Amino acid sequence: MTDDVIVVGGGVIGLTTAVELAGRGHRVRVWTREEPGATTSAVAGALWWPYRIEPADLVTRWAVRSLRRYEELAADPGATGVRLVDGVYADTGLDGLGDWVHEVPGMRELSGAAVPGPYGRGVAARLPLIDMPVHLAWLRGALEAAGGSLEVRSVDGFGRAAAGARVVVDCAGLGAAELAGDDRLRPVRGQLVLVENPGVEEWFAAADDEREDSAYFFPQPGRLVLGGTAQEGARSLEPDPVTAREIVARCARIRPEIASAKVLGHRVGLRPVRRGGVRLEAERPDGGGLLVHNYGHGGAGVTVAWGCAGRVAELVEG
Image 1 (cartoon, rainbow, N blue to C red):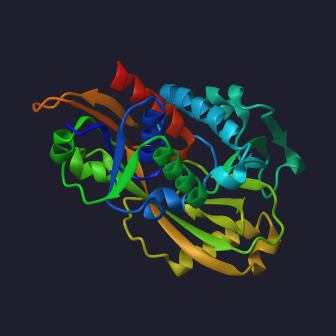
Image 2 (cartoon, helix red, strand yellow; image 1 turned 45 degrees about the vertical axis):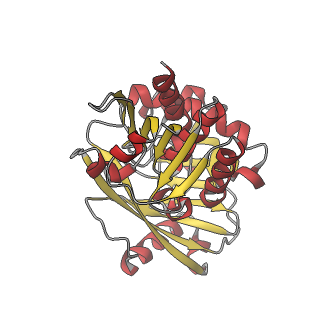
């Protein structure tokens, strides 16, 4: 066996897992069917927030570990793509969120006129907001600096990887439906609109896990990211112009200046939501070796990436 570990998948889950393992001294190679910048992760908004992900008890642990790591990475935002940004999550209160709220410094409840838009309450917090193209490039650089590598190649099963590594880590996202034979995975389509930022400095979100449409905007370098949708079972990667107009209109109800902002582009991604929650467990196939599954992170892959990577390392080393 020529490698200690092969990680299948080059999105934020796969790359973060690979960086974690390489940092612990493992020889790591990432196999991905597309460049990291072409993955679903590159499309993400991406605000640290546990959204559309289960199970709740484990999510808190994974999310908090990730939060601490992003707080460190925010010291060099130009390189890592991670910034700490103030904002408001509307139409919810602290009592409606998970135990993770106690780990967010300064998180507080708002009511009345303190909440933008037609909402009676919300919470304010300074949270990691991640420029995903920059962050994915940073992760790849960190992997290579630790002696790891990335190879773009098609993967039709885990057998070939298992023949070349002691450990295979399945971070294939929606691809795990076929690779791992998991019929619990389903796509949840998200569409975004990128516009010139008309002066918005704080993030805003009002997204209900049970609704297909939401309103959020995230100020990223050189653009304002508007969202969004959560369309169960939809697989089209083509932006829908009607949906795009509706997204802009919803965001403009919160910040009217968004209505006239120049549109820079459109993005669509398929979130890997799994019935029953994230699959993060190890098994030993008949051929020997170790296969660790780490997929099904729904709309919160960025939020739990480092926590899940740490758990993968425990399984690999345990």
